[in-house]
Image 1 (cartoon, each protein chain N blue to C red):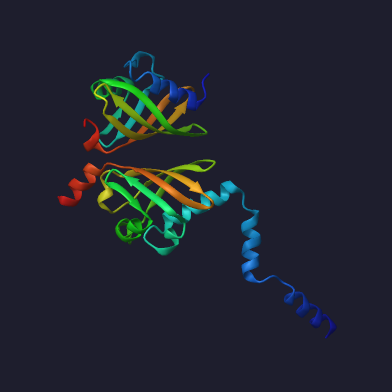
Image 2: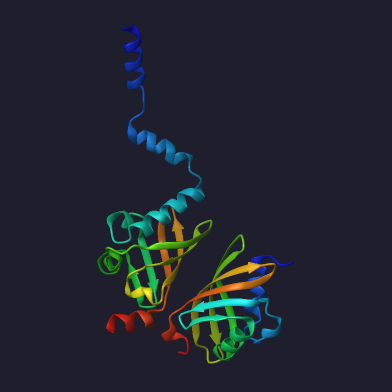
Length: 111
Length: 143
């Protein structure tokens, strides 16, 4: 089984391909962001699909893991070349992401 | 009387309070020292003790702009005056830390939480990159 940090890095690596099928998400994953809260893998992936569309690359700037918690600071680079910085906190249980708390400036998301 | 003199001499031999504090401080691990630094900073953001935790070349990077030590002290720190900042979690790895916190009872309540990435250098906070929803904050302040 992957470590919590490896699980998160793997999850982020799947974003550019929008490979939601293989993302290590728990069925009851909870996601909090400035846009609100969503609960459940299906709802989360549907909500994310349009948001991550056109993401060419994810560049991890910092990552700290402790116990079942992983905090990551990364840049999402769009096909247009625009860069969007955000920070997320993950909680991992049995190799699956059960919680994501995302921090970013909503006004810059689609800039 | 001999016993009394013995006690007086023993008291005179005690280290000064500053030395006692230094002795306690010296027993802290680097990790404990860093956590104490971070907690002191966030516990007194609008006050002098917080500014003493920052290095001369301090930079505070936010969605609203980047501030140096002087600008932080003048413009940013006063925003926290009288607010009770609540640390939710701290993760620490060497000279880097990440802090998640909320500030109940302020315009930030709607965004609820912020995350700061800190770089520590020689017992001071050198750099903070802060992530929060500035859009929601602006709307709340204007509204």
